[in-house]
Length: 174
Image (cartoon, rainbow, N blue to C red; front, side):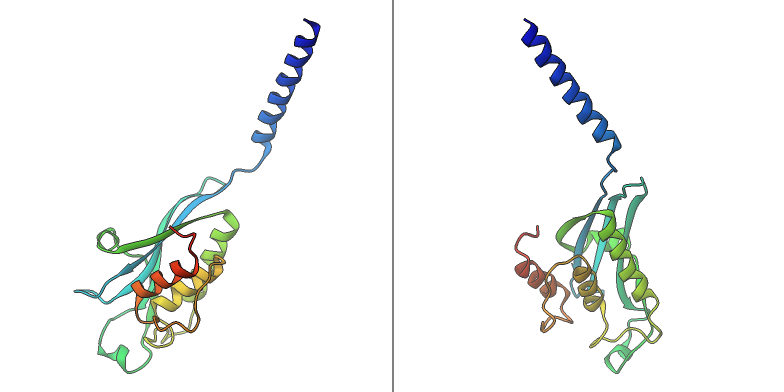
């Protein structure tokens, strides 16, 4: 009988210790980032991502970013034009193709935001169909998340094909 009381007290103490340590440990971020492509149709082909969740400090995250020309015109075929980082609309997201989702901790989420900031601050004329388009932007984001990409890809102008290639290079992605 005495043995059972000691055993019970040890279990209670262990349970109390685990509860206290759970309260003392910092909360983990739960920010999910989903990568999309939008096929050619009435809109220009495009690649972008959506981030949703909450950071460890309780900040709600519900945003998305892609990089595009400010005005999609024949001018993009002849050289650099003004570009910007832009959040897609809900309607645009709904008509796009989700490819894979990754969950980020706070550190990786901050690194992702630094990539967005860097692209926002590129001097104008910042968009180049051949050298700095939405796929190049997404490639930088994906690299910041430590995923594999192919810098010699033939898909710099093909968002869907680029996303599929990234998934093949990172078979754990879903």
